Image (cartoon, rainbow, N blue to C red; front, side, top):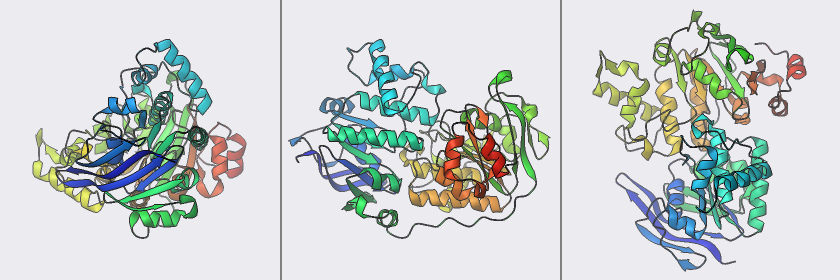
Length: 500
């Protein structure tokens, strides 16, 4: 078949890095073509070139056999190219339907857009309230909006950059069924993911990139996950460390916390020193409210919270950090880091030892950032690199490393490996396990069930604002946790001998 998209020797240079080095790639109509690579391999830059958001320095682009210049997103849309971004391109203050309408022809009314949006959400299993404002949505809900907006544009080429990173397994399978149906009708799909099992399941071909270059194009169904990982990394992926030491005394106690006000269900659990406690659940079921309450970003009944026996009433995020309670939010850019600031400046955001009496300590700030970069293998030009210039995985490693390097007594981590490649994910998980061994109490909120089963000692589930009992990971299965996500845990929890 004639290629829908052809890239020939496309290159893109930045002052400190060659992001794409003479990349050639073809995607046929009706093909689902995966692009695999480590964080920083150049995948997202290449996709932004196709979407008109970045201009290449060299190379040629053909669309349906015709040479084209994609000099902006509008030109890409005119060709029929739609993209779902890893870092969402949504307006926080607008509603879901208003955001979707911005990417569609101006002739469509909001009422028509909402009708089409509701129908698509039901058809694809990506339910969303069209009237909610984006700033009230969780990361998983925002991802649903991005996917629905792209599908409603009825594209000829659909680019998906980490589309399943915070979707439930059921939503992933529904999306895959949709993509197969659309591909059968002639849609070309470029699919970027770090989930090797998903690439083997959905993709017809897979192009592997390393350090900005194409190193192989394979049939992923003839490869194993291990062989794909070796191609991506250029060696063996790191293994997850053992962690079977018994936990210590209670560190963080949550007793009768009501996240929805007086009418909300009470949340109770105890997090021990030297323990990793996981929170599973479908995005939008109260996880965001829980971590905001624990970190001090939301006003709740603080009598329900205590750290090492000390009540947290009246203490904001900074005061809680001083007691050793630290937090890695789910949203990297704008919450975990300021995009326009350097890594050294971003270290200052939670580095309370990096300023004194109102004065910043520039040397200490840069040294701290350099230590994090070196220890956590953050691939960037240095401490003066702007946060927005890093790939998602490398920025995630920096943010997680920033909090770990501050030696917390308790750490809350929300979606620790969202959109992170297999090597970086293993590095982050091993860093959390090492921190656990030093006596830190760690609460991990994740929609990656495999991740929770890999690193956690106990696991609980959040559904419709309610929290299940915490049970030992060895006492439950992934299938059981899947049932709990629907709120069905009473009988199973009793059988597993769960303890709060």
